[in-house]
Image (cartoon, rainbow, N blue to C red; front, side, top):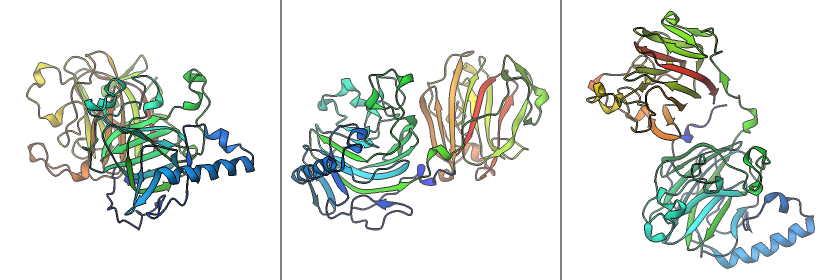
Length: 428
């Protein structure tokens, strides 16, 4: 299934927006609390299984509470920092959620997905007093996922705007995987939301995440305002393809190009020293995620061919070549930043400093959707670029293949024995 292009584009709305973006439904009508009720931090499975009369009692009591602490002014939802969390009456499975919020110093809030905490919102200043909990890293992380270092717990970048300004969230939940953009910056990339309600059980044995639940707007510690809350329900993740291994660990069956310039050793693909060229999968891909491991010798150079047409230079005739390079080597001291490891070669520069030492195995994940590419290296975001928005190239050299919508995946060797293993691709 195609993930909507809006995965990489947050559409901005004014406070007076009435018509939702195409495919989206408003959760807040801008006038009153219709469609909402109140919940605290509580396991959805418990209240979902209440007898009808008990559930009605709970719902009615919550209506009294939310009307004490939530109000609507000029199309904006405002909470006084107290009371139950505003929760959708409808439960959702897989979805794309857009909203805006504005808060004050000292406030602490969040967004519960399927009733599970939470996308964190907080005062990220030192004066807020929560740096020891990770507030200095910014809002948008799945803070309840576990201890420091747990995937998704802390945001990839600090993206909060100053107090008094509106912040924009774009959240996609597919299965248990969550992708979050805050103010158009990627802060969580395909991280699993952990089942908080079974948190006392070791992770490997925890119950799966609830399949459906409400969207909840959490609040405590200070006033918070919300507006432009829209949702799009998505096809369940269970109906998508899983990752497919594109290398059998034995030989280069399923690969094309100058395969004689590569060798298979210990279940790895390695470019022969002094050889090169681009080898590529027989299969073509449009939008996809690829996960792999690679090992670079000192000063080594290779590349990932993205949407490669099957001939020509992957960096120019393909959508792009993602650099695989030991840019710590002295001979690369004068490189253009768009040549560093993880960069879309000659197009967009990746962040430096996350490569392991030469001859160590690195883990990398690349997501390609439409014209956008996200690269995660050893758990760190190093590239988040929409190539369609770039019109300045290294050495002013054009990239004729940059707009390709489909192509092969491959490795672009440059004479060095760079190795790859555990290569898995998932169409999206």
